[in-house]
Image (cartoon, rainbow, N blue to C red; front, side, top):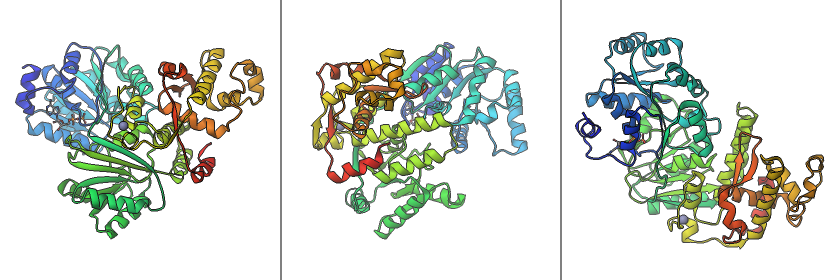
Length: 521
Ligand code: ADP
Ligand code: ZN
């Protein structure tokens, strides 16, 4: 059967979407593929269809056991021999799966990464024909990604153990560095398929948290989204509890979902969310695999820890293509809290540094004055040619000040510093040079002799940090997380340096300016 026939006969669809056909062709020709598609873009078919066209079993690596089960049930329903191997199975069930594998009776095997890399699983797979490996949620392999999972790292071994089996890596979220990391670890000379991440039907708005923000949320839900479904994301379990209580008190049908609840109640709430229009108040535990088409709004009561998180969480709105809204509230306390979480995490020093930078980029997006969508997409390496007209900054341009000259000063300083060692220097060093401060390192590198030394004396360290955040958020400056977070100037900055583009910053009230002292590090 051809790919089209399988699509029609098993899945009931008439045509492929986006890159699906090209991805399938690539794998069928035995070449590796990197597939970046937003959630709901149709990644699963990219490996399910080749699995039916090739001899042997396709191995799908997936981190989420619940999702695995859904997929396997769905496939069996439509007559495809699929099974899952994970820790929830009994010994007998595992034996059955092994037997079916041996007898060549399975077309698709879903397996958790930690299970796949067990010696006996690998041995078994080496003894039977494997048609392909599909690594789902592939960004989990990257320490630079927002969802690093140590068990993914061991997947490195697939390259060596199965050199002739085509591999594909799929993800809905990965910045350029994460992409590189995925390719380096999992793939060999892949073709990359990068779909647009734009979700034009989602309208973005971001507000600094004021005193009455909970009442604005109630008004928003009752006034604009009465009897519709939405998700309210909170940073902690306690916050989710208290926000849900507040919404309920105000007559809103609110449910709770977080990892601290007992399973039964949590699952009941999840089922209810799919059954009726209501508001789920949740931590990020309520996440991957939520595929309810008519979620009309996502509210972030606290700032997400990265732009990737923000994108993924807001991406759960408007799957049906109809207008949907993302509203973010951010504040000083959030930052403090997130920094605290990072500090307390058991990640190593590099992980902590990366996390702090990601948090900063998110803040940069929240503080920005220009089109949110342009910046959001730029973060994922995509260029939108015009302001979107469907975000708060487009609809209601904030009061802003032209800081083009300052941005140019900082960019030149980053550039000149990086030229002296060919790699770049970190933020504090560059800003010290700009401000004409003296330190052993500055003398040692002779950066006091650079033409940009001291040209930024008239502003504080904090001010320059804010400009830098904006430059990073707008992708004018790259941060190399692999090498001490050194900064380099991106080619995109050319127009800004030549004065053909302007650089605006938000004018803030006195209150916010004083609080910024604490925000900046
Ligand atoms: P992802 O894994 O990228 O989040 P899925 O593979 O779960 O997305 O697909 C999302 C939805 O789109 C599913 O309901 C799927 O059946 C549907 N879908 C995928 N490809 C097609 C297609 N070519 N035509 C119609 N619907 C499709
Ligand atoms: Zn816009």
